[in-house]
Length: 399
Image (cartoon, rainbow, N blue to C red):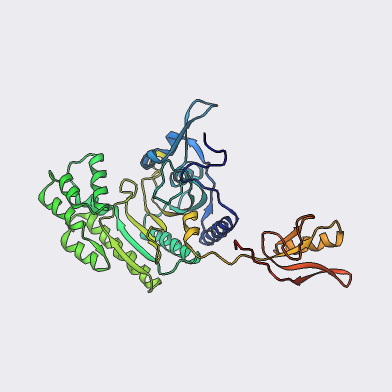
């Protein structure tokens, strides 16, 4: 029998210090998005399964928890990604003309972790731009993601660019079912040359050669020149993808000469989901991507309104675990009392943004220990009134 306090694998409580870091990041990211004109939406955690897994959302099927609604008997799902919900809101509820910018921040649930140390309950922050097909929207999403990570304290940022249209252009005219396409995309992403050769054995020679070339097309700016030579650039999708990647890289580099820009044309992560340029952001010393995004123009089609769409998302829990924690704000320790003047002073301090903690009766010597939150000042009675004075901090062994 399981102990009552044990949690499921890859599910964990968030304790005060970590929760404070996550909350500080959440507020900062939402403020940055609001400053760029993104409107906050709060989709439900629970929806009818058909809605969550419609269209490109079907890629989430294996990651989605499913249950029966005891009110209706219908199958419900706990969201594994918020992007399809944002697309539903844009297409069905807002139904605006022109550009709509939406952002969100909330938990998602995964049936399986995405890595050995990953949580099955990420706290997903994301930003989406609907209604603009031009690369200006792609650039805006990338710059917001970069700004968000810089604001979190990530340094030595690297952006990795790719494009789903490269593979579609290479395979244009080659009969292939959806399952085989997915297998080829996975083999390319894993740089598995034998698997790529086996899966494309029946394809024309030029296609087989192009697929093998893709496996080596990763690195710096030279990748785009090599791709123009080695891929069938006469095919419109390939040519347009390479031009768009060059356009984005040029503008990113102009805005931040220190930004490291890489290309990996065989990275087909989310191939069935993305429709154009995609990107992943890394920080110095971090092995996994800290944010991912790109263009997914078909995401709203199943909701009756196919609109251009681009955006990104990241896991705030994972980000908080790898960035340097901010300095913890110190509070003011106040003695517990019903004194009206004291309580009025406490109220004024809190309204001014200070943290004021009452030392409750019977919990040790407040002058020496204080509460668990560090308090570097104290409210004391002096000359007939309550004033704030400095106090020595006592650092506990676990600090």
